Length: 119
Picture 1 (cartoon, rainbow, N blue to C red):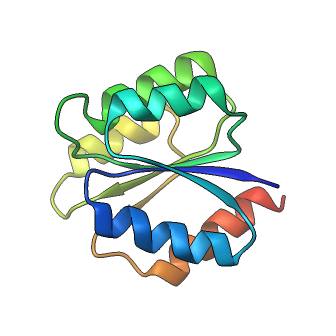
Picture 2 (tube, one colour):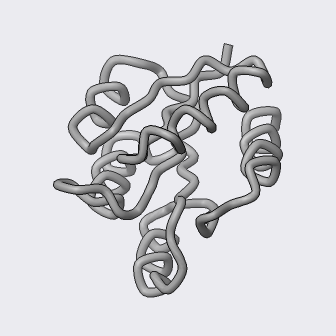
């Protein structure tokens, strides 16, 4: 079973993504912050990460940087609000493979995760 980590400080978004990806047959892990996210990355053999850019404490860029240092091949999809294009550019340079702008189309996110994990 493929394992997907969802990292967002908004519980509603975590739960929405969890429900949609669970229906697709994925095992999901939910993290509200960078410390939780990195703990899951250490303990679980993750196949994909959905990562919000704006998280209190350790932001999405720092989490992405740390994930890519240890797991360079791990696919990371970023979620961001409008107007953060400089951060998006940095995320792509650090190895994020795609980004979604909030509010995102949940089916578009689902389809992208399916495409990554079924290739």
